[in-house]
Image (tube, rainbow, N blue to C red; front, side, top):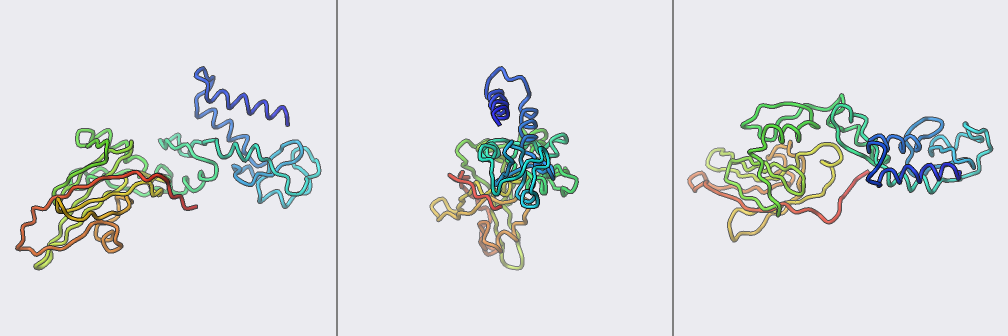
Length: 276
C-alpha cells in the first residue's frame, strides 16, 4: 500500500509541475489504468472496494468474491479504498473516441454516459450546420464546432457580455464564455396571422450540450417585458420549442408591420445541473 501511495503521489506531481515528463493524455491514461477493477476491468467509480494489499474491485464484483483474485487474500466485508475514491473524483480520462477527434476529458463516473451519446462515436447521428439556410454542411455532431471555426469564423459574433440583437427571420452564430450558440429568429405566416419565434441554442455535443449551464432572455419591444428560457439543443425545431414553452413566441396580424427586431443576452448560470 505504501509503495502504491508513493507511486500515485509521483504521478500526480507530474501532472502539475511545468517540467512534466508525459503528455496530459498519457498521464490521465496511466491514472485511469489504476482505477480498474481486477475482475471485470471496468473503470472504477464510487464505491471502490479493495483487499488489504489495495487490489481494487468494483461494487458489482466485490460481493461475489471471498478472496482477492490478484493475491488470493481473504476479503474483509465492505473494505473500501477512500484514497482511490478521491482520485476518481480528480482524474479526467480521455473519451474512447479521442483518436477520431473528441476533445473531452471526463470523470470516470460520467465517461460511459458521455460515450453513449458522443458525437464522434460510430452511432452518432448526422447533424446540419447551425446556419442551415446558408450552409449545406452535414457531419457528425462532434465535428460541428470545428466546422464553425473553420468555415464560419467571419460570421461568428463574439459577445463578451452575452448581449445580442437580431432582426426577424435571421440566424446568427454567437460566441460567449468560450462556447458557441446559434440565435434563431423565424416568422411563419399562415392565413391572416404571422407567428414569430426566437430561441438561443447551444452548439455542443455530449454532456456539455445536456448540462443546463446557460439561459437567455430576449424581448421584442425596447421597453417590453423579457422572455426568459434555458439554452437548449439548437437542433430542435422552433415550433416544437414554442409548444413546450422553450422559446419566445407571439402572433401578429399579417397587415401589421413585420419589421420586428429583438434584443437580449445569454447568461451563465452559477451552477450546473447534471442528471445522472
